[in-house]
Length: 172
Image (cartoon, rainbow, N blue to C red; front, side):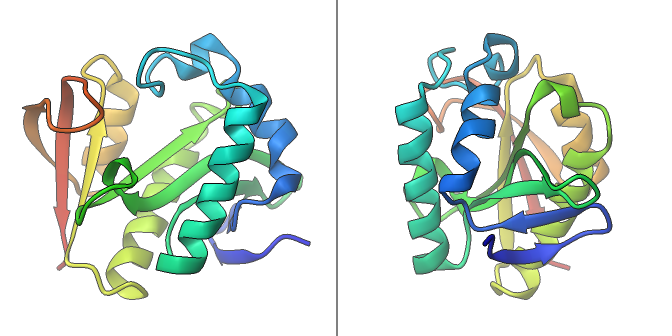
C-alpha cells in the first residue's frame, strides 16, 4: 500500500517504494527522457533505480523530504517523481526537482508538483529558501520554474559537475 505524503488536484506524491521500480525503470531507461536528467547523460539501470528508490525512502523517513513518486490519481499510474532533497543529496541547500516519463510531458504536472512541493517545503518543513537547477537547453523546465516563482540567478558550475542554470525561491 502506498504512503501518500500529500496530494494536489490530480496527483498523489508518495514515499518511494518497490512498487515503483518497474514504471520508473522504464522511464529512466529511456535516453530521450534522461537527456536533461542524467549527470553523465546516461540512462539508469533497474538496479540503479532500486537503489535510488531505497535512498529516497530513507531520506523521506529521516528528513521528511525526498523526490516522491508521483501518481496520477485518476488512473493510479506512476508518472514520475518530484519533490525536495538536499541538493545532490549532500549539503544544506534544498533542491526542488521533478522528472516525468516523456508520455506525461506537457500536461502541467511539473508545474503542479513544483507549486505543491514548494508550499510543502515552506509550510510543513519550515524552509526559508529553495534552489533548483536546469540544463540551459531545457527550456520547458526553466519556464516551469519561473512560472511557479523561482528567480533565475544565472549559470553555475557548483552542482552535479555540470554547468547548469541556478534558480532560487525564498519564503514569502
